[in-house]
Figure 1 (tube, helix red, strand yellow):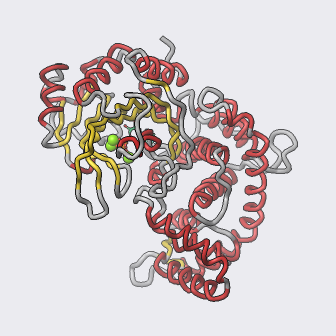
Figure 2 (cartoon, rainbow, N blue to C red; figure 1 turned 180 degrees about the vertical axis):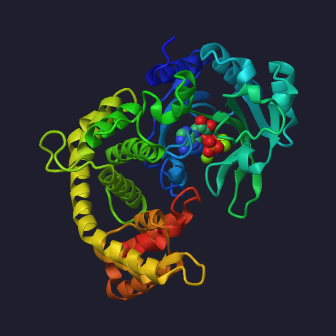
Length: 480
Ligand code: ATP
Ligand code: MG
Ligand code: MG
Ligand code: MG
């Protein structure tokens, strides 16, 4: 069968539709939920139903949910499997079926519909979940050596600091069964890929961390579309699937390099571009505008990273048509071409998306050109002063703040460039500068302060999968 990304999505949804699930559309990347900044999983739109706050309209549903996970930004291009933007295929039960059906269907889908060889599949269960263990072993017939009991970090799933949660069970694909069954680490990116997580959602986690049984037992699952595509398309990583590779090819063309012939560093940079471009197109499509606060800062940071990396790769100016020197709109067009099966609305928002990207890119290029010289100088100073006590050279918080405040350098970009030259950044010092400025500005702008405080509250509530460390940064920048 065709293993295209579109075909996989289609097969997943139809498999569950044939088993009584209603196919529902993806929710927006901007959730209707103050405890999370962006949609990180398929279950988010169903949270009120899981919590019993809203009645269910159907007993079970299936979706292809667009997700953003900023906590994986450092993994992008470095592991073979992580994106900031990806699609999560899911099947959900609202007090309808539970563990047994969820496990048996997941196995049937994986081995019959997607035809993955059973002997390549490994299972993880929560350490004391005997019920899940016995369904996998006694009913499905997975041998003991391929079922691993794992602890809370991997096998107890929570959508945020509070909310519905429960033990989970995951399916992994083994690329190297020849390596045997001894001392295996399912997290080993060179051998395994986790592709399907089944969450047995039966508790509500309160502020104090206590677990309370939900009125109903629910099922929440997630299968990474790009990961299944990577397995079925037999490519070395998610980025080389038909879901992302056309963007990488376009970027390679603009940079006049060949992906296949590139060294690993260049490949990583091209993968980051492929990943981040999808994220920014969908974020802008869902109404997020680049800014210095919250979600706006996420999209700004991603855009600026692509601009900087693109320039490193030698992409500059009018590479394709009359775009006034901006290359992000060129790449965005490729993303939009790929998007029609996922979210037809993106196409209708094309001109706004391209405009927004062009504006943000050109604005950043200007600051980049001015700031780069200064940053070079700071780094040269740090290098000549540093290393005296055997420590690494360090860029002061004051300098990093000046670059941020006057030249619009996201602190992460300063840190990234510094890292490339072997210099660290005094992040504590940077935070202190931020806080000083915030206090000064608050005194001066009481009116704006109100709106900042409400945003600040939102940011405090976000789970640690988001930019928790930078809420002071976001807040003070808006007060300016
Ligand atoms: P990993 O351990 O690989 O980081 P996870 O355990 O954090 O994955 P889950 O929270 O269980 O992931 O999400 C359900 C599924 O969504 C995963 O099994 C995977 O297929 C997919 N997924 C999760 N994070 C990503 C990501 N950053 N990029 C692509 N797919 C992802
Ligand atoms: Mg993860
Ligand atoms: Mg995991
Ligand atoms: Mg998981």
